[in-house]
Image 1 (cartoon, rainbow, N blue to C red):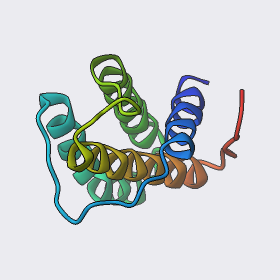
Image 2: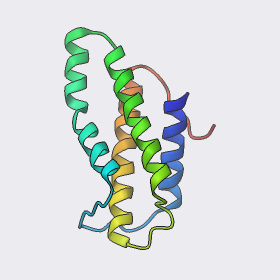
Image 3: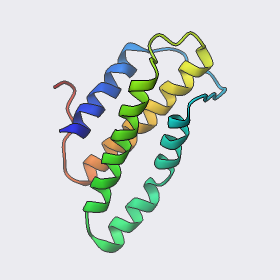
Length: 116
């Protein structure tokens, strides 16, 4: 439920912040770097799942991603960000988080939801 709640929150932020994305990327927060690093591990997690046939690796991973998103949500307010490059970068990051969580849930056979 926690992961689905995180996904609903991410998608709500994305829906309410439709802007033209900048070509430049900007980050000024350590949690953003941690999220990027964690997202980069997704292919390795999938490889491990395929080798071990143990879905626990994937569930632990998406729980970690959702937890990092929660920390980001507590630390920054994307909707009120005035730096357009920073806001655009954070929206891109949320898009990536959403895609990874959605993909992982699909692999696990869990349907996503739009609202709670």
